[in-house]
Image 1: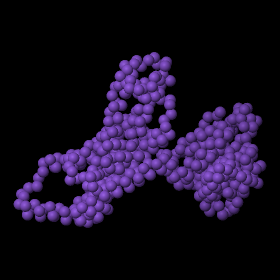
Image 2: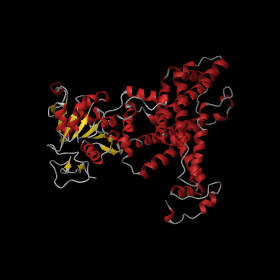
Image 3: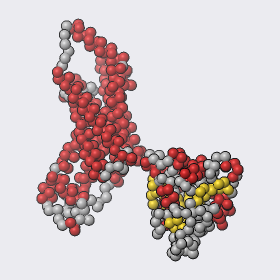
Image 4: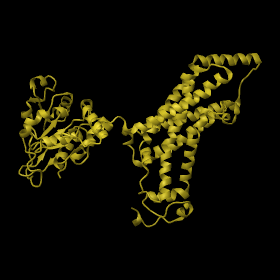
Length: 518
């Protein structure tokens, strides 16, 4: 296999997409003359004249390629294309370059049928995605349990269909995850990754080199059979966010209703006071920190469960249950949602003194103090409580900001694994501990005073404490030498008898020879 986009073919010179002109000495064992030299070796043809074709042509020209655009109406297309691009008919454009980008929708592939001879031996780059109609038809057939009738076009990828149309060409799937905007503005962070798949190794290498020349990071996905999954990538709507968002909404609804009953319904039912004005701000602000702390705890619960399972089975090779595996893969989303709720809580808390109800209440307290003859309402204990819990809240939010920033691809890519693990694991647990202390100092003694139990229900903040406290306790137990040492052995590939209450013996067991480590 050639390197850096060099194509090895039989009965023809060795062609390089990077260097101009053929390089002598090629041949043997390639694709049977698939990539015949045809003029400038840095030339690319584009079939289509839409927005994507225009953006790709401009990007190719800026990278130093000669671009030929094939259109059914070259004169009309010339108004939309960069002036440096050569506008030709489709047949002429297909014959002008060894690499041809098919920038057409799937439903327009039939218009290319007459180009079979011109496209023979060429590398065809399919950049299309499945249309909504194709996806609806595919879902309908899946629900019906059928394998698809007729020609089965909705059951295979667009790239495979194109390969069947042109069996003498080398079809490669690429650039379907890149938008016209990304081509115009240049790749940014995660948008740099371009999956590439195709049955011809040489054709795949050529397209990957083209992607590098355009500033993207190609990702080799193997054979063309992977094209179906590649075509699904840009059409997925937050697949890893579905469970975290649903869980977040469920927790929000539960805690909101709980706070509504506790803070609004109880005063109205027992004392006849209408405090429904609390719903927009106070009830919402009572819900936000509870959900944020619960979500942050749920980020570290699956890690503790996974460690416990590895200790119990004394192996790291046993698969986790599917529910735990899905939970582990959505921890980043849970953490970002926790940060979002914590940020909203901070904003709502800063807005509390701005409300008219707060000012009325402050004036009433001052009037009652004057009427009772008090010269000072200073409460040393409450002052210290307030100062402490505000300070802890600020520190917790700052740590969550750090966790959120390091989860960004542009930041995480700049960290090695040890640095990333230290921030997300060690500092993450510290953030959970500080957040829990913030909730504890906020509640202070109210968790033990009967007057704060409305309808015999504890205050809202009490509901946020069990899960993070249990998570911190589990992390503390796993950090003990009797658990951390056998866990380290298991994660280094050692296997032994199942872990069932033998942590002391396991901790004293020798590490063993390095040859026994998988």
